[in-house]
Length: 465
Image (tube, rainbow, N blue to C red; front, side, top):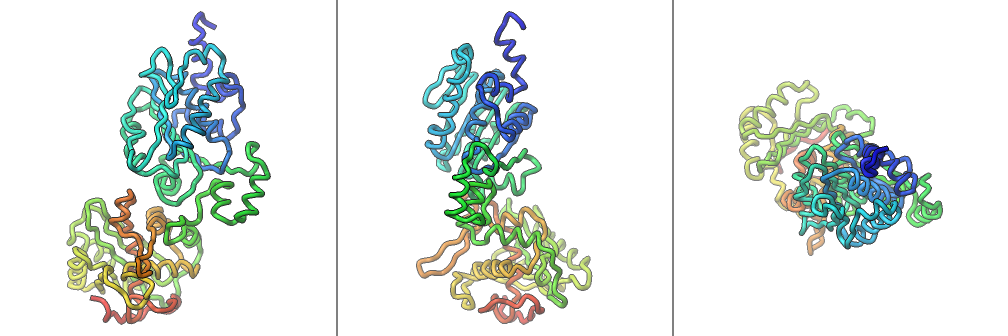
């Protein structure tokens, strides 16, 4: 003990948020809460927690913010959520409730208002600030600079990607930490990507309602009775798992995941068809997908190649392929720069065929154009549940992210690349390349009835340009 009580406080709790909860806030963290708190204290800079409903997210976040505020200086903490109700009525209200549980000596150090909690002695250098976030106001987490920074994102699945993009600068410091928490409500967006493809860069946790003392058995039984144990509602709200399908996505996540895990072999005699999607913009990639019947064999992605270099890369793939893996057809999206690639590949002796996916189609009357028809065929291929995809996080995300809609005449339309960019999603280059392989059907871009994937493809290609 010293003559400085606050120095004693720091010596006791600066590295012990669990002890801070137990002795200062008078509650014992659940194991998952303690695990997350310990990770923050150990210096982990990116932590994401997907969970069911009512498992103690707000309590954990509130306790961490107060511990961070009182044990670091200077310190700036910003907390955000997609709605003011969630932010102020739930999370920020929990912060203020926990302040009341603190000993009077610590409570007197703090001032709180509607949107801020500050240290009285230094309100501009030590504070918690609550800011709602939206696509129209993505700056909620931007411009936060201090020796110690903590960004807390509640209901992160509903926070627009633009908000996370604006937060990049705030995470530049060595002592900056981001914590994302939420119900995993959709299979798109940054929160989903953290678990699907960025897990190596993040500490990720999953918290179920099952066996959680904060969740009543009645809630679990009610959710199971109302929606079913296999439903997406049960997965999201009880198990803390991402849904098997995004309601707005054309291809369900479950179909893709099942295809990745499936153990099947390519059918004997099945044709080998490659799909080539040629990059049109600086951030896009040229993608080559190799499908042999019911199995996608390989995926190649190239960035920064000019058209002739791309032709050379494709020819190198063809020349190095085993005899039974060489392509019977290479289907190229011939819109714009793709037509030149197709022409050059044909000159070099490759079995390249150009397809204009923007053209209308008569074979599948429900599709607005050929691209939409090919996506329909791809989904039907997956729905047969007798196919296999390689483990490729980019393909998984790209297949399940595009949304669909209907025109006024009832035609189905898959979200375009430009539309996806406008809502912050990357171009589905690999997925489009896979869909192109389904343009190798007999007599048309598609069949009017389900394709028999077990037999070789008829290579009559009079319909292509």
